[in-house]
Image (tube, rainbow, N blue to C red; front, side):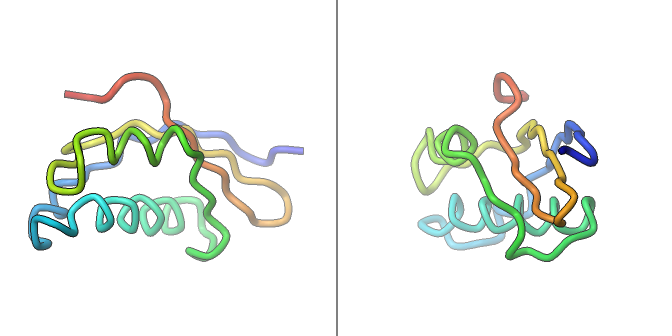
Length: 90
């Protein structure tokens, strides 16, 4: 079933370099690329749960969190599913 299951704290500080109205979209892209890099798969194989997306977009498009905890599960076929792991990290 599940090959590996890990909890990551993903830093999103680099998102602040994007234009203000694109920051949450950029944060979603950063989460995908971080998980693809660390779980050794392609970006297309990373699926984000709706609760993770809602946690990133909770404060709107201009103010995503500075870092976020994510529980990622990698399956045997190479697919990765990520969900929000608890409360936002300060």
